[in-house]
Length: 410
Image (cartoon, rainbow, N blue to C red; front, side):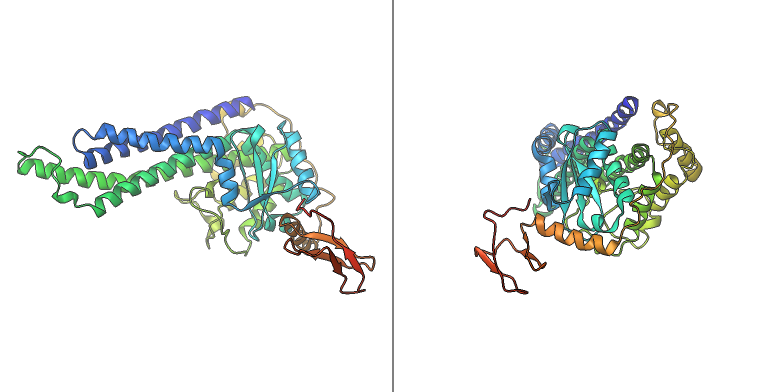
């Protein structure tokens, strides 16, 4: 496992270094055009400064910013015991500390993990995911996110996202500066420059504009490549942790074919962190182009269901090569001989989804501060957090009920 983590880190550092080169080149070219022949170094300093500031923000509170932007709310064991039990099981299986658990009040099924390191990691799950998956499927999704934490993906994907944000920000600032200022009439070169110098300046402007347009595209392709490889490895890790690849395969199938509206709190930078591409597409099951944040879901499902002999990295690697006809994404150092037998489906697999969705509604009410009271007549009352009275009359038996003091969402 440690060999896999080290190989994963090496690939991540290589890709992030390439993104840093794109950022530095863009800053240099922008400085050269906007500040003159000696402005390239100044542009490089400005680009690096932007990156350092965003990096500091990322390290200090990047995970909380992402969770807040996703409208995720932290929950306790009392809110959803089954979810906590599954997270605890997978944390123990991966030999990781228990991550913080968040729920996103959104009907679209999805999940992601974030944090700087395993000790500060968080797992966020949408309400739609809780309502539509059985226990084995939920375990597969949580195991996938635990694998991201175990493989140290959460830090590198966050850093790559910050790098991409820096490149996009610098590119936009540069293009807007050129648009709003009359750069064509300015002469940043020597006053004695002739026709040849003017032509060179125009060529430099054209090169700078092309660089400003292409840089974010190149960085985004690198970011997507970083994310796609990690999804395969996290799938392999999930199968290894659960010993039941069908659980994750079935979950991915349900998520891909879900008809719920698209997640409302997602953007191009955060999309690669989710287990499935949150942007709805008609051909999502077959999506495989270079601009996709994730591998094709149909391919991921086939690979997992092709693991018929065991749940080790070697078994995943064999299934991957059989399905894709490509070289495996699992590093050779991780392909050690392991005998991890497949297990049977959980006895709790067959659950009533209607009951689950009803429970999810109650869970989100708890998260949002509702107080639950059960009258002696059997009626269950759900009191919103903005209800200020100390007593409430039961609408069925007219009995007066005292509300608990200091209601909380826990």
